[in-house]
Image (cartoon, rainbow, N blue to C red; front, side):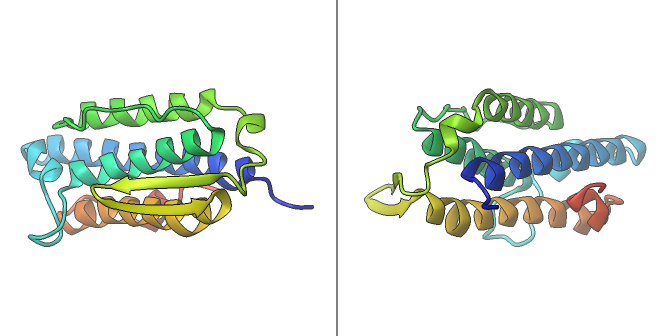
Length: 168
């Protein structure tokens, strides 16, 4: 039995967004319990030349909402990228999950050979749908999820691998 494009993307996106939300809940609770200004975590980064946690979450959600829309052949929702609190980041995750859940399997399946073109300023990247999902979106999504996890773990939030992967 072969795996469809929907099966290879949407369930995992939703699961990992749920795990991200749970990690941010733990970070907010940690900040409150330790009397740490939450903006310390929101603006934290692993290295001076890396994006802060807020941008990591924004990019992770952008990856999966963009992928879902492009594979389904519909417009990509636009977000403001102005979140500065845990509550605002949680709202962004919830909005992303709601969008992804609104797309059904018949819209995504069969998109393996759909031409996907991304523009980054003057640079353009072109993919077929399957390569876009497997070689671009999934690695980038997990990079930004992992970086979010690492920023929080580095700053003392009590999270571990099970928080990242979730319960089975």
